[in-house]
Amino acid sequence: MTVAEATHLIEPHGGKLVDRSGPRPDGVEKLEQIALTPRELSDLDMLASGALSPLEGFMARHDYERVVDELRLANGVPWALPVCLAVDREPGGDQVALADGAGVPLAVLDVEQAYEYDKEREAERCFRTTDEAHPGVARLYEQKPLYLAGRVTVFERAEPAFPELALDPAQTRATFAERGWRRVVGFQTRNPIHRAHEYLTKGALETVDGLLIHPLVGETKSDDVPAGTRVECYRVLVDNYYPADRVLVAAFPAAMRYAGPREAIWHAICRKNYGCSHFIVGRDHAGVGDYYGTYDAQLIFEEFEPHELGIEPMFFEHAFFCRVCGQMSTPKTCPHGGDDHVFLSGTKVRELLENGQLPPAEFSRPEVAEVLMQAYRG
Ligand SMILES: [Zn+2]
Image (cartoon, rainbow, N blue to C red; front, side, top):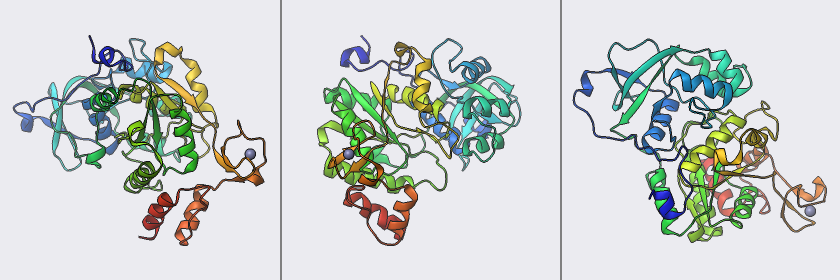
């Protein structure tokens, strides 16, 4: 019996939780060494933990090509974004060491192949734009010219940014099982949680057993709110407004790609590996600028049969406080006009906080606003 059967949790993507961590082999110091970028380091860590199951390493060409063209691995299993390692040239040996930015070796890769790839094509297909102003496209264009594929064995996990929130898929699954949760909804976020997000997550939680608040803590754009501040916001919000036995906050170590619709699928698949049966997809999930249509990240789920993804998306509208309804609402549930709604843009919130003013209580919980104000003024 598998763990999933024993605990009634959803199966990992592809059927089995991958574990690519292992002991440090002899002679690592003699191997050719490749320094990974922050995005590649995040991917490596997620390969080690099984967050990217069924992947066991950086993608070979047959997987890469089919993912770019058809959102599937070579074996037909849905997969939305390349997980690739870019290098300058083909290595001489059949193994290489993968190191962090400081030159500390973390893993070995069994070289399967090195192959050329077309950056513009990848950009067009995966990001729906070839515009260099798009942060994901810019990062892609800066990459080295070849992809190096192969299975990895990770013997040194990178120091987690938030050790108390560092839970691998096996650990979140164990926690869900201990708490008796079967149906768990995952919430991806790279922004501070205001009352709108609180409303969505609680609305979703009303229909399932548990909620995983899973803030992304890998690399983001420099103008996103820093992960440390965001994590503190989640902490005060959950401590004050959520029942402790129905919610788990853990860190999602991925780097943002800003690939909008494709990243929504990718985020959902990863959360399935963490044991989530449901996943919240808001408007413009993982978007940036105006590269994606408001509902593109929801519509893309229609390209798959529900059983293929396994995890069930829960689609939400933007929420606001309506003064007439006297509660949080969305355009789906409130008939009143914009003048009755309390809604602040991210820029407006930032302005208020920088001037030492708290946003209205209908918009932000005071504890969260306090954390943000400290961050902006400190
Ligand atoms: Zn209303």
